[in-house]
Structures are given as structure tokens and as C-alpha cells.
Image (cartoon, rainbow, N blue to C red; front, side, top):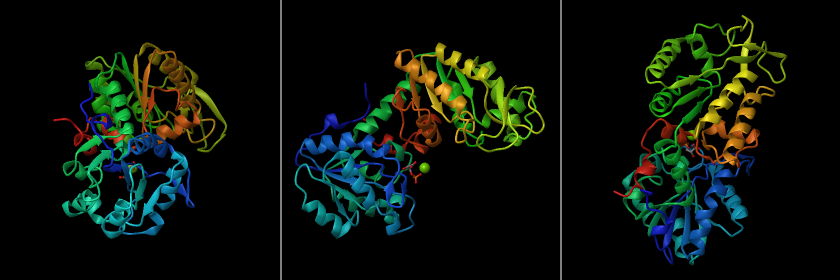
Amino acid sequence: MTAFRTLDHVDVKGKRILVRVDLNVPVENGIVTDSTRIERTAPAITEIADKGGKVILLSHFGRPKGRDLKQSLKPVAAEVARIIKRPVKFADDCIGEPAERAVAAMKPGDILCLENTRFHAGEEKNDPAFVAALAKLGDVWVNDAFSAAHRAHASTEGLGHKLPAYAGRTMQAELDALTKALEHPEHPLAAIVGGAKISTKLDLVGNLLDKVDALIIGGAMANTFLLAQGKTIGKSLAEADLVATAREIMVKAKAATREIVLPVDVVVAEKFEAHAPSRVVDADQVGAADMILDIGPRSVELVVSVLARAKTLVWNGPFGAFEMEPFDNGTIEVAEAAAELSEAGKLVSVAGGGDTVAALNVAGVVDRLTYVSAAGGAFLEWLEGKALPGVEVLRIK
Ligand code: 3PG
Ligand code: MG
């Protein structure tokens, strides 16, 4: 059923395989603090190497303007070696003499990581000369970087027009999970959309409303919807200029018989800090000095009841101020329920987006949901219904 060429469709033996991975991982003082993206891409790397391919890793790292050794991929390449338990050689540039020499020295099964592609302006410009310089290094291009697929850059998209192109195993897993959740879901389909601002999620809400049976709104975003319902929210974060938009969204949802689920009770505090004295009030009883920092127990129950009726869940964005205890409670309880339903085979749950993964990590459910995407921006753009250049180029036409 897959509409993409994958590693199942290519004989890599003895060939030079340019593998676009996403090594854009958080690094502090030269130490990788979260290796999720490396772990996700390890299967493609080892599979190609085991099949006798020469694995040439390509990735960006950070957002350097030109060559900047503070944003070198060298320490990250060392982390790749540690995780896959094999030697990974490193070339100080991703094109030209250093790269060509390193590639020429490779034997089947060897793994080489090239320096940060963004050291060259041609990467982000998808400049044909830069694409050609990269293409010279390989016989085949494998894109295993779903999380960078929203960029039409030389290494994420351009190479797909120059070399035979295939999806890596992580790309394949991401596409399978997202297709199952959003393109061909089992209904009822519920979505949780959280986070601070509706303004950044308008496209997403619009696209989801066309597809989901229930849209559960969390985070400070929900406050703007509470205002639209005519409630007062005290000192809570909200976007006053988007109240009319929130009202339109509710009217549209009603006309389309989509359910919008908003908090019915909330946890409020007068200070925005961890362990600030707090209490639970009904959503229409928020005082003038109160700040809404989480959903309350009745809201958790309501959300869980929606999930219990659903067959599929797409989740982006936490509920409360999850980065501060105990205001991570609502997110954790809903995450736990989603994990249990998924483990019982009753729910297909797919989650993603930067903050979301951090929150689900805190909740300890990342391995218990059906699939948690390693992508931030790319996951959001997919939920918005946008075509991702790095995915489009892999499609079998
Ligand atoms: C990410 O971390 O979201 C991807 O690696 C893309 O990085 P970018 O936002 O700098 O293009
Ligand atoms: Mg980003």
C-alpha cells in the first residue's frame, strides 16, 4: 500500500548510499542530551551497512550562517558511533576534496559522516551546483529525515531529483503512522491540540476540523476559547484578538457536527511558578486574580471519556503549563489513559511536535503510545495538511 520507494526496493551492495538523516539533536557543552533522533535512524544505517552498502551520512545541525565549528557535527557523529556500536568516520566538509577523499577510501559496510550541510549557503537555497557537488559522492539517495522533510533544501529534497531516491526506515515508519492516523484513520478520530497560541495553530485546527470527529483543545489556547464562550479567565494567558476566530471555529465545528472539547474545570494559581498554591474551580468560576495553569479532574475525565470512545488519536501540544509541577498533572493523566487504551489495542495513538514529545517523556508514555514522531515542525506541517517537499520527492509517480 505504500506509495513510496523504500529500502526494500534497492540493492545497496557495494554502492555509495547518501543517507539524509536528522542529526539536529540538542547538544550542551559538546554532549548530546537527547539521542532520540539518532536512535530512530540507527536501523536504516545498520541495515544498509549490513547489506554491504557504503553509508554516507548527511545532515544539518543548528542554523549556522556559513562555516562555524561551534556547530560542527563531529561530536554528534561520535554519538552515532556510540549508539550503533560501530566506527563512524568523519569528513571535515560535506563536498569537495575532503568529502571525495573520504568516500573514495570507503569499503562496503563502512559508515562515514560528512560535516554540517548548512556550512554551505547552497544547502538552504537548494542550489543546483551544491546539489551536484553532493550527488557526485553517491549512487543512491536515502531520505531518513522526516523531521527535516518540511525543508526544500539540497540534502532533503534536491538530491531526490538527481539520484535514485528511497525512504529510510524511520521515514517509512513516520509516513505509515501519520497516514494511518490522519489519511485513513479508523473513526471516531479524536485530536488533542494544545500549546500556548491559537495564532500559530490556525491552519492546523482548520485542517483537523475537516477530518476529526472530536477536537480536544488544551493549553493556553483553550483560554481563548473559554473567552469565546463568554467566560472570564482572570489573568490567564490568552489571545484577545483571536476570540472572534475561536468563536467562528466553534460555529463551523457545530455546523459540521464535530465535537469541540474544552475544559469544564481548571487548576488556577495566582503565581506562574512551580508549586504555587493552587485550587480547582469550574471553568466559569475563574477569579480576577487567577491564572489557569492546568485542566481540572472533571476535564481529565471528560477527555478520557472521549478517548475511550475514539479509535484513533492524533496529539499535538500539552494541556497545562506542563513544564512546572504540579501543573503537568492533566497532561500526565491524559497521557497515561491514552497509553493504557493503546496497549489494550483499543486506540491507535500518534503524537508529535517539540513540546509534545517533551511532555510525553515526562509522562513516561513515549514507548507506550502507538507512535511518537521525532519531528517538530514537519509533524505540524503534516497536520496542517501541507505537502512536505522531502516526502513528495519520494513518492512513486
Ligand atoms: C528540526 O529540528 O525541527 C529539524 O531538524 C529542522 O530544523 P530547522 O527548523 O532548523 O530547519
Ligand atoms: Mg524547527
